[in-house]
Image (cartoon, rainbow, N blue to C red; front, top):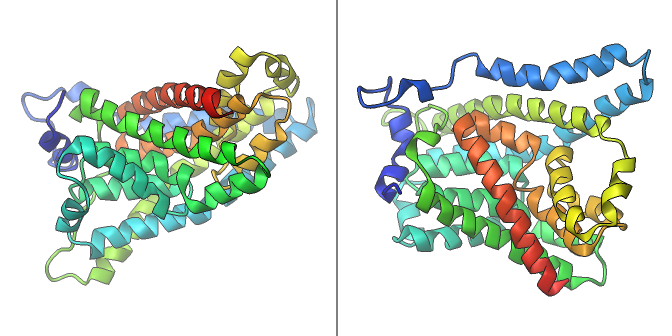
Length: 345
């Protein structure tokens, strides 16, 4: 277990320069790894396009439609998140966060999770904000709890859930409780098991520098975060579109009849479809053949783990973090959904 002070200074350690004598240089990612990620998303989609005329032209059109829909749907919220991240970096003094959050990291985690209700955005917005919070001295465990809860419990999402499931307030409450529980558990798990070398935030100056306009700092931070995260958003959207068109619709019927298989199946489907959290409740409501608990898992996992979010996390915090954090979050979210859904639904 790493001490909180060590975790809180991870950004500074990441930006300090080359690895020291005691560090393992093998943990550093090769500079060309984004190209590998891009190829993994582009090559399958390109194959579909090239083979479209001979195999199924409708699949090509579906791939283009899904890719564009995911990107356009998420782009406004990515703009919101990067703007908020730039504003935090330029205008909010670092000591403010120390006053707002409890001094003990174990207590700061649930408080940060509850604070997610104030950000009416999707998962694309929460990633740059969480990165900015860490750079301002917030313990990563609390920032990650905020990252997971903000897309799932904000008023826009809960209202959309109530509209998608009319006459079912239990579904709204179940989504709120399961999402908060997942965010808190993941924050505490990071305090317990998180390691500093897994966290590699994007290197950039944070905070206001003397002699520089705060608006200039805001512009620089916003430009950097948007261009950096936007590329990974597109990569994630392309990967989501590729998997979306290759999964046969008949598979849905195979899993819908099993209460044990339906929950992990819809959780995996949420990861692949990459639906924005403001719209996923309507998709879940349309899956009427699945049990309520399975549809709850779809709405809890989706805002926390999907292909575009994994790409954004990898680009912002590093591949080592994204792989471990996404896998653990998926397991915890499924378990919390099954527990809460079994009690309330």
